Amino acid sequence: ELKVEQNPLFLSMQEGKNYTIYCNYSTTSDRLYWYRQDPGKSLESLFVLLSNGAVKQEGRLMASLDTKARLSTLHITAAVHDLSATYFCAVDVVTQGGSEKLVFGKGTKLTVNP
Amino acid sequence: DAGVIQSPRHEVTEMGQEVTLRCKPISGHDYLFWYRQTMMRGLELLIYFNNNVPIDDSGMPEDRFSAKMPNASFSTLKIQPSEPRDSAVYFCASSSRTSSSYNEQFFGPGTRLTVL
Image (cartoon, rainbow over all chains, first blue to last red; front, side, top):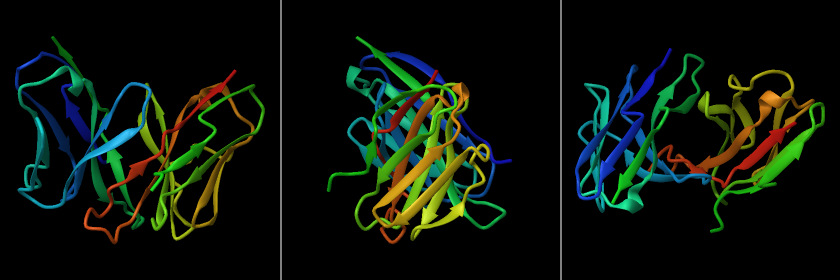
């Protein structure tokens, strides 16, 4: 069974600090997505990583993908309060039945404190 | 574009009643997905369609759940009869794999369902 594991699941950090969220997955895939969800809201697409070594950056967030290690990271630089949200990684997989779908991690709830 | 549109945004019903959730995907997207999100189980894919045809319904919990996509701009998820354990937020998402972002999915605002 495919597993997508994020850690940590809860992260409390101070403004101005750096931190990394990890997303490990258990099957072969070279496509991974990061989403953000604010409380009571929908999921917003942040990054699309479509090959080994892919790196994308937007503001204080940077995402990377290592398909050989089956690992993606979401790095936060100099955190600000507005980054407080839950972050999900999602792995694009092909099932035994031949369908293709995203499998989501449980999410990392990030709280940035002043 | 207006994005993915879902209705209703909130639904409160009593156990045993029929519930119908509606979704309009982004125009031009040929994939449509229904997800359910709960604290206990996280985000689960229920079913998805390609060009209005159901491709994978392995996530549909049981026969009480059914989904249809009669045309490219409309889909429904029906629960009959509803049970308290169906209480969750139901998201609809759409994508176009012809785009450079491949399977990047765009989510609607969700329907918060409460079954009493």
